[in-house]
Image (cartoon, rainbow, N blue to C red; front, side):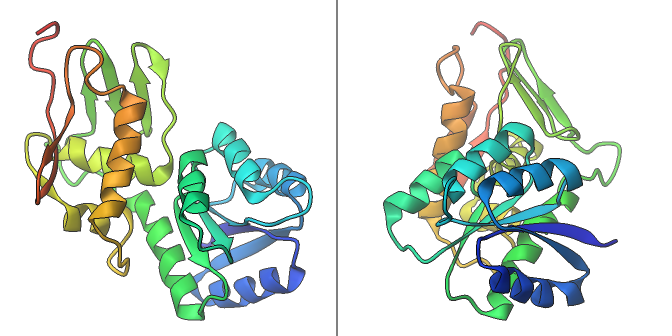
Length: 236
């Protein structure tokens, strides 16, 4: 099945190049040349992936990403010539799933795109015993609809954040290693480290207000990974 990728970049030649790279792997590329145009096109075509430049006239890539997150959980790959750590942290905070530095190689772009799109297959149940939800009086997580509610209010997660959270929920009570987390949320080709997973766990804990409602859900096993602890008895 052909996937749709939306490239938002004021350089039309770059969009054409990306289209040539992704066409052989059954991905159709749509181009927008400004942030406003990109948001309108995203609303219209419902892309499976957004590839977004940081530096654009008018609305920059961070603003576009933040607005996209208000309407969808589509995976977002941000292109950047910047190497500043603060810029990357800002990007993750507004919902970016992965960064690709310019100039990039054909193989690296294809690998990162494949890894981001692979997430759509992560949560399909293999059998009737498959964990597809979690609920207590404070927290509700539906892995099928990719929705989270805290005290009855919806909490928004980026696709990568939800991939990580759903892995911990599916394996609740078991320690999930950093390697397993990276394989699930970033793919086999990603060369990340424990700092990357720690940063995302930090984001998830903040969004869950973990530990603020009488129970801590995500625990750290130092040197190994993380595990999700269900609330055994509400109010304990």
